[in-house]
Length: 431
Image (cartoon, rainbow, N blue to C red):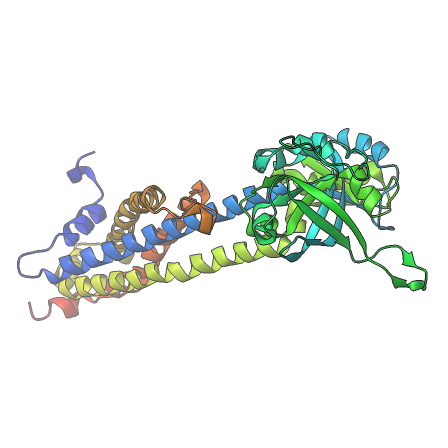
């Protein structure tokens, strides 16, 4: 289709966008309008891409340390007969693995520091099927955690040059926790439970329970909160230390689709029945992800203001164009052009500006994100990341593009209406 075969509204609208020698102001305003839309689209895509990247990076780190679903007993602090419940859970569709765990808050002491932490009792062989703990081990070995501690013989000493067998059960520390306590693989730490067995003074006076553990591994999850306040011991040792007998705190579950975790959790509750309660990873971290979602929405709304400001240039450009083209508009109306046709001419001008700015802004936003991800590096020992995480979602690009085009179109309504209501007789009276 050639230019001459297009509807006359398109032909006239495209012709009006080209500046004449006697008036370069409209051409400059058109360029500024296109540049404003371009920068607004690029800024929106860049911001949303970075925020989505950080959210997914945070999500991956959380799910690398915690399970997708956690099952508890509503009516008591522990769970009895957990092996039978695990078999029922593993039969639920989309469940990949399940493992028991113990969860308690304790104090961890070394020769140089004291730190309050969360202590988890796990089955090392099953834990690697549910979380990424095995991949997060940076020094030591996860398998050392399940090796039983041999009885310590009194007055026993190791021969010179020989490495003695560990006399205490193993414990795995987070990287930051290890640095705070100055305790590394092979060192010993004390686990102190604030609530221990009753003393001889009666049930009100409680004495804390203390046990020595040997550090067998150090993990790094990439989440400072986990690396500084989380430690693991073997499940039997946790049950023994907390006097839990054969009970556990709950069951960790891994599923094949993390975004279906909420529905799978409801299926687990239906399979287990009352009094069991299943919560998915989004429920467990609701405050964090809700804050990230709200922040992303607010940033989108704030950056849309850039596009709205650019739309003011479209209004001013079309208003000047209408004032300059009053004679041409009058001639068109005298030749039979309707009000709707006149409005379409100037609406087309605004749409062309919006489409051009969007077409340039989208690849510019991608280029900006590529530059940030490639050349902006961090010290991973300080920031836990080496590069800015970036992920562009197709829905975000579509939403940004649609918003820019819609705002550009809305900016054409008033100037187009002004042009459509122009009286031909008044415009041609002094010609």
